[in-house]
Image (cartoon, rainbow, N blue to C red; front, top):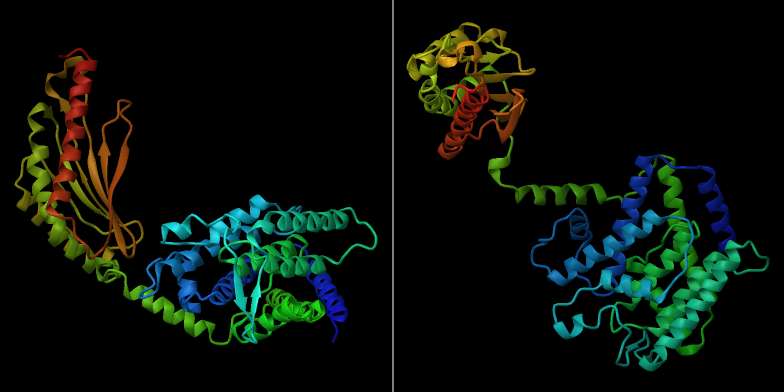
Amino acid sequence: MSYPEKRIQIDALQQKINAQGELNTEVKKKINYKFRLDWNYYSNSMEGNTLTMDETRSVMVGNLTVGGKPIKDVLEIKGHDEVISEILKIGKGELRLSEARIHEIHKGIMHEDDPAKKEKIGKWKTEPNYIYNYKNERYDFSSPEDVPSQIHDLLNRTNAAIDLIRQNKNNVPHPVDIALQFHLEYVNIHPFYDGNGRTARVLTNLLLISFGYPPFWVKTNERNIYNQYIGDIQCYGGSPDLFFGFAADLILRSQQLVLDAIAGKEIQEPDDLDKRISMLEKELEAIDPNEEVKVRLDADSITDIYKGWFSDLTRKAIPKIQKFNKFFTGTNHNISIMNGGGYVQFVNEEADEVLQKLLADFERNKERFQTHDASIRFSTSYGTLIKGGLKTFGCNYSFEIKFDMIKYELYVDEFTENNQRNQTKLFERLLHKPLTVAEMDLVVNKLTDAIFEHIDYYTKKSGLR
């Protein structure tokens, strides 16, 4: 099939895509993820990047420690993904190419450890560059001194063609022609010291996307024919239509992928799921075993926490809060296990006596325990300030441990001048992870500081001091 015939197919498929209207969020996410993954992997691997498809996927989700691979390769994938993610967000719309945009894209996708090479990123080449083609014959790209004028001319002609399309003029080039012609001329100039193939593909896809078409990428088994067509054009006067026809097939493939996603079909490669699961397993292996979920909430796990670090915390807290008892009358502190029958009141009793009474009450009512909204609340209740006279006041502060099915959160009341309860979360832990001694001391100190500040503030405010 000739290139003009393939171009007609492209238009027909694009009409089908456009007829779908605005795609739902899930379909767009699925399509964009596939575009990003394949574009990142294939375009960079063409230029010697050593990351596998799985490792590329891993970098895309934020993993910058791909074992045994050069950091340059990792950072170039990361930068490339950031650039194309922004391009995919742009979608169809107004576009004019500029030298500044080309420089920014080059800066985004390149990484160098060598300071001398790093200086070259985002700047036109200053030294000649060349390749050996598929016939092992040397081909020299545009000389450095010609790059500014040739790029300027290419951009002017490309932008002029874009303007004609936007203005709905007659007899203008097809949008795909504009993008692919730009690609050929850009790679022939080869304006940078390195990264020219990647920037060419990014810019070509930027043009396609701005015209409403999907991006394309060259798979591993397609590289030789891609390089051969371009080499024939550069070195031997080959017909651009062969390259255009080749690229048209790649665009058609991307369009069909979009239509398949819209139809609810699977668009991952046949073995992509196995690869993704394998990568997930590798990434999870690196997680600290202490962060694994080992306990789920039930009455027995509450008992274990109660007999463990909670009892240690209570033994620290009770003697400290009892130091304020002498200032008040009608004091009656309490500890309650909410949603599960466990309650004890105390004033001056020893901590172990309080803990024994609470545990006994909880054990008696253990079958009533419910995991929904479960918590343990340690509450102070200082009834009435003895020395307050007509200006007397009370004082109530607490700390609370709130549970869900896999974790607990510890909150402590803080003093506020408006006497409104203000809870501050200090810790969030998996159920099997206890507080340390230092953390218990912090909880007790926060609680007693709030009590002291309350008494201090209201005795001064009322004129008692």
